[in-house]
Length: 472
Image 1 (cartoon, rainbow, N blue to C red):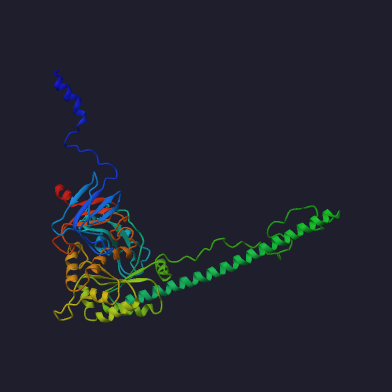
Image 2 (cartoon, rainbow, N blue to C red):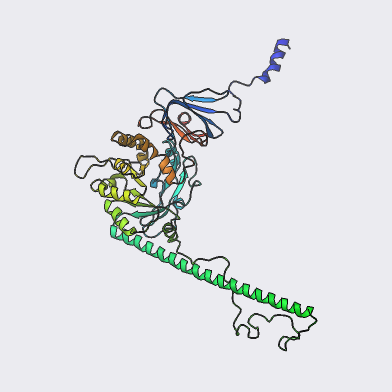
């Protein structure tokens, strides 16, 4: 073999083939450069960058020094934007089963979930990382559940299986109000019954422990007396009744010391509350402020009837104002509903729509009115289906164009619904040290033609449009 060929063979193992890139080192930084970063922690950053390492945001700003080995995605030039992930506070369309009305508080939404292939992925492609699902049915259908969208399977593991109590003040008001009134009354009776049972148990325990203490003290005194008698050389003869036996008589045969009664049973060491109907348990928890209720209304009168029903009670609840075409019912009398909800101090979920006043072409702006009244709003898609989700950002753009503050609109689809679902640790303002959870658009967030290019969850790219298109 020629010497030159031998040298080439020896050198070959030192040079990996060009189509097999070496594995990236652990802790390799990932950088996104965009035209605008909506941090929601302060003012937006123009012409900025966001650097991720080991699942957290390592750096964020507008002056970048690219570290060695970094992977850089530069999307500047077309209005590209980074934003915390979108959160869909209601996605009833993911539940395909049905259930009637009535009191069904024992059910969880996750129990009725059976997803079709790609349903969650479709939401992820729209920038939605967290979604809440309602249990099916009317009246008191059960409790909500919360999912991440970067999971797979017909029934994926939930972030939260059991969250809010769902109440529906919809349809016939008399029937809905009677159902709620009866449930509240029964729950209050159950609370009072448990309160009485606890008081009786505490009394029985206190009396039992006092008797045990007294008997122990009496026994101690007797032992001390016997010791003193034995120490002084005295001798006490056993009584005729007890002579020849140092054992205590068996329970119930104590020779009349307890009046011939059976030995008293010790009360339980732990309180055992009376059993409550499982359908009523979440209502009891709600009245005790251990759970939040999400109450949906399909007309203004339902809100006023609900407030009348609550009276001076003060459980935690949020209002959901009917979505889709039903929301137009609120336009005519919205002023009364707005003021009542503001006075109640509750969070309000409503669709991103601009309904016209009845029999006119005059638009109203419920979201802006509620915001100006000091109400915390959470925005929902204009329709309760996937097409509504896909038109969500266009609807947001309409709200902002007609007067809703841009920052409020963005918070109302990210941070606020996340907090309402207890997921504020996942969807947070973008700042150094926060989990690297965000979405990257190739244009402005409120530009309906812009598309989600990347979604990151804990620093992992869980959606990459370019890879999706290559696979197609």
